[in-house]
Image (cartoon, rainbow, N blue to C red; front, side):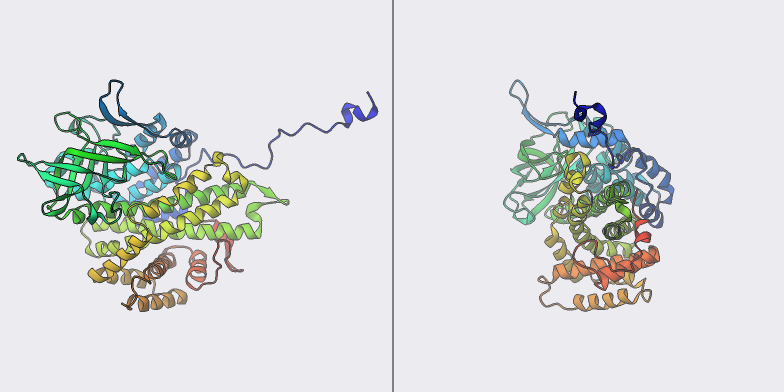
Length: 552
């Protein structure tokens, strides 16, 4: 052995020692979040905070996060026939999916709020829904539709009497069986068809009334999620026009209704959730609401699912922010923690500001929904317009915010193991589901034209902060001028709905957030002292105060 080969002179074998990597973000209470808890309390559900902490510990637990990963890696599988050739039209899910469903339904995130007489019940449910979004979004599609179906079903009291107690329960019982023999039910909807999409008035699915009072449907739906749910509200054309019908997978006598699943969609994200194309052929259905008024009937369901789109996008932004902040607090670059480096602090503070504005608006909408359903006409008018505004803007901001948060992790964020790619793939969904950006911008115009009381309600909400910030006052004056111009309304619709969202968020933050947060929002979002990307807040911004509001 030469001198150069002595053990003492060899490099130390330390290549497998892991350093400068953040620990897993597990074992924490996701509900330990000042912005979320303040909003829940402010909107009337302080009584639910202890339960939110319990659910937050579940969401932050290692087992639940494993379930979320497994449910997306082991996707639903369609089984059209059994081994003997009989048509069964069933979708098989990984056990992790069922575990997620059981936990969320058990936490009251499906229809339970409708059976809870306490003020703030819908706000309590909204807080839990946002926490569950941070865990896994796909399983929340059937949860959301079950929540949303109740007000529409109430247009037919006899049907509501039969099914509502099971839709508002807290028991998840998968499998196709006679609905009234189960302890809990899930609902879905079938609106769109391949020839029309959003233009549901182009639907061709036909409905024929029977002597016994039921109807028979024939047609093909284009995008029906969660086909293993128990009940569906669907649109079909009857002699009086487009009507809404209740379609159970299993009929009262225990026989299978005709619900042929042609295929499952191969989607960008939302992989744990099965979305399908069902075909109806002499399918038994019951009329819901007035014949020929199907859109008016099912719009009650659409309104509530649009609320969940806002909640889900706000929750998705917050989940991505938590990952970015956690990484920055544990990762060192050039001799200092990322979170202490000025440019990264700007990025994280800007993301935190975006997240707080989205969360505050989402919970304000949940509070309006709660009060509207208890008879507050002013809140109902506010909800009508503000839901379209919030659905447009918060869902638009999710993809760009999640992309920026992913970039904070660098290459680690591009790795599936980080969970960030799944958050990114989920990000565009809420902007598409229940109406794309254009649909909601045009819906805002319809509300302004047909329901002027909704504009008055929005004015009252925004002007509650009048005089508190000159930049907000100026932005509201400019928005009022835009709203009063009838010419080129459709061309300007996106510009107007965006500005309305920012002014509304500004009013909420000026009234409810710490001064540093409200000041940074008004400076950057309303007065324009910001670039086009995140991380361009001006010097002098109180970054520390903004980061204190970030989760984890």
